[in-house]
Image (tube, rainbow, N blue to C red; front, side, top):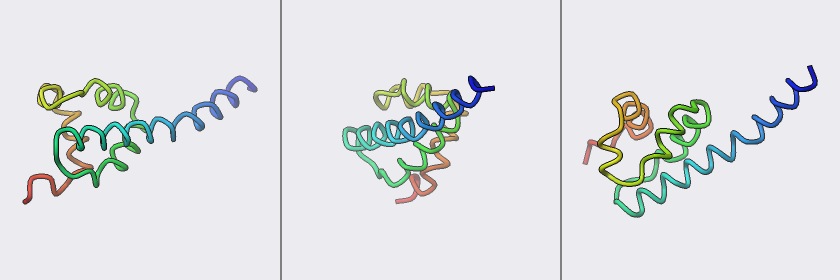
Length: 87
């Protein structure tokens, strides 16, 4: 039982860092490639709750990677940037 509690505490401590890291990576991506970073906090929170999404986002380094991402990843990213197609 103690190992389970320790693992839960460790996971809770790591999740905000992961969210922050993903949000920071998002902001860096936007700064480098243009766009609006208003959804980066949302994306960080989504990635913290979904390890597969976090891994997929971590693999995106440029527009080509984003374009090559699977549709599920694109949909999850788009959910954090609902006004991206408006302009």
